[in-house]
Amino acid sequence: MTLSDSIKGFILAVIVMGMFLYGFNYYRYSQTDPDFCSQCHQLKGAHADWLKSRHHDVLCQQCHQLGNIEQNVRLISYVLTGNNPIGVTHGRYRPWEECIKCHAEDMAQGSVSPSRAFGHARHVAMKQLACKECHSGTKHDFPSPQDTCEKCHQGKTVHGLESADFSCLKCHSFIKNPLPKFDRTRCTKCHVGIPSKGAMASLTCHYCHKPHKKEKPGSATCIAECHKSEASVGQHGVHWKKDIGCMRCHKPHSWRLTPERAKANCSACHAYRDPKMFKYIL
Image (cartoon, rainbow, N blue to C red; front, side, top):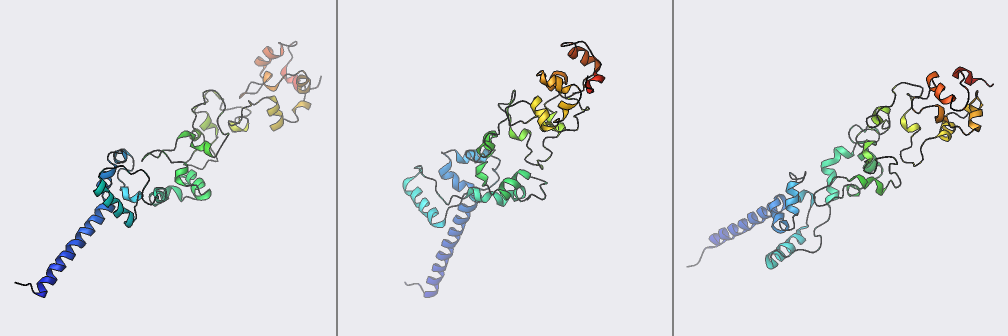
């Protein structure tokens, strides 16, 4: 008994359709189902790390993509060799190229409207840095460690007491425009006891304090930055020649020499005189 051509054609069509459906389902499985990846990566821990990461709701294949040829070669290799580990990174290495597809809102602010992520606008849009320059991390864990900034900003460590573990982001806001980053309100969150009113209260702290320099502000800083003509006013010149610095009489952050303070300071060297007479040359 021989089959008619129509039956043969039908059987062939069913076989072809079955192969097509199988191929389609396999392609969809390999491209959209993380379980496909877990068959090899379960033992390596990558799949487990992914499940615990912030990207657990992102498909593996959205960031990691193998070409069709390599994918089939890997499949055949897996069938023939089992769970033998693959020693080299496989697939077209493109995870860092895919970040912007999800995180474009963080990066595309530009220098004009840094309303959401000024830091990303400056580093990614303006400086053209790749995400991995800061967010390298380990498998599926991409927070930027505190020392990342030092890769490019060498010598910008903070000098001062208890600053060994001080993060750059404590002062440099990555989200907002960094122009007001050194306003007094920001500094006094840590540096308490600074008078809110006084002769210098309108100045920003970094006008005198340079956090990335080792030297402490002293008399030379006061004169060079602001008070160049003070040596010629009243008794300043006399005291300056005696190597008496500004802060010997002017207490930092309050600065005004009150009568009470003058009685203690002036009397330490000579007979007390009314501070009002200091502005005159005697």
